Length: 531
Image (cartoon, rainbow, N blue to C red; front, side, top):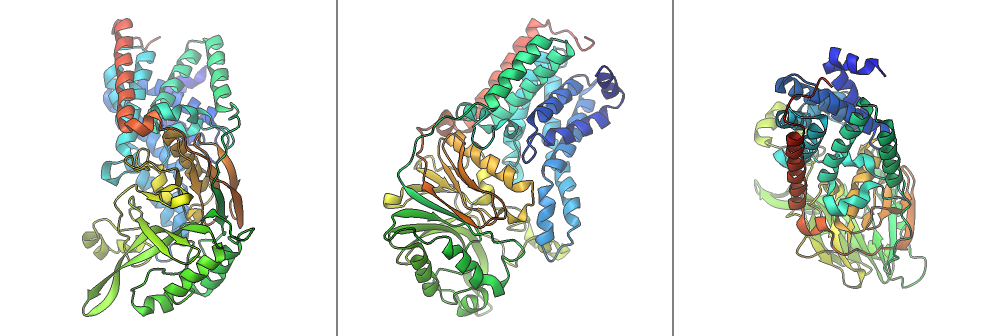
């Protein structure tokens, strides 16, 4: 241990890269959060020791490149299901994306160094916490945003325990990330000063909070059947298997008793049919299982049974006349309700689309370069208007978030019409071993932030019923065809975050920055980095 600071001083670039790698293992699926915190804390000490802002900027960027390359390795798996692109390009795409994402920890590190360059490590830790909050918030919306993997994801408890998610109603994900980073650096400072008693007490308290039992949650009254049909990504677009896929999903959806009043949930990509009327007939006969939208709706209604209401992911088309012929010019990644009579409800269209996954940005420029092959299929998806709530009568008021949308803190709920629960259908079959548990973790964070249950139906797992505390009540593991029969957990009263949104996030950043300046004054504003 004595040699580690010396090695970091001798090889700071290598140290930043190594600490970035280690910090990613604090995330799911490994979730070795003590290692992740130690890596973040050690990086904070390293950044504080930098002799110039340029060195601090570079250290933050190298840390970010390594961290994001490891944490986002699941993106590479998606390329193995993209027939028009070599799978090996996935392993190039991940570090290329990380070169950009690393700008945010680089800027946070540099800004914290500039603020606290003449102060103590405590002052730096507080400034770093404030700047990390701002960086994660900016990363979530600049250039359409990439919010995946907030640092606070480390401190979730096991599935049946909230962990530090219990703080999310009062701070939000990005502010908790900053507090996590600042706390990690303060722990590193206790180690640096050999304050073992203080370090031990802080570590024990943190572990107790992470593993604190959740206690019994309130029970809901709305019956629920949540279906995971286990539709593998290698089969999901195979037209020869569409009918078998539907039958598999339908079998898992049958009511356990006649006239069952319940909510039934199917995943994104869960229906191999176009369900709306009015498309040219060739789209129904060539690309669906049923061949007729009216028949498809009726047999879905029969599958769920009298008294039930289905919410399901589906695809809708945008039809226009091109060169005298009606054809699809776009599509919607959508959710709709279907009742037992086969009546289709209003459509929710996914608003936060995945660039290069669901649409090609700057298509006019990039398509001639051959980059349209990055997008599965031949049509771009069209974005919807944003979070919406749907009154489903005695089946409650549902908020809708499709797949990737659930990772965007503060963008999941219609604040003017608060729902009773959030339905989050997803297709996680793209994302290998690392992606699904990280996706589930972020859905848990949205539940705790908003004080609303989140119901996740996925094609291949992990499907789950998450209560308003972020606790997983029931789940279905990966690559299993199964169903959950339970009740929708009740919502809680609107949280601080639900009421204030990212104003609360920015208030925490400002408060931490102010505390850093106070710590600077108390330390006399003189250099103490040789201590």
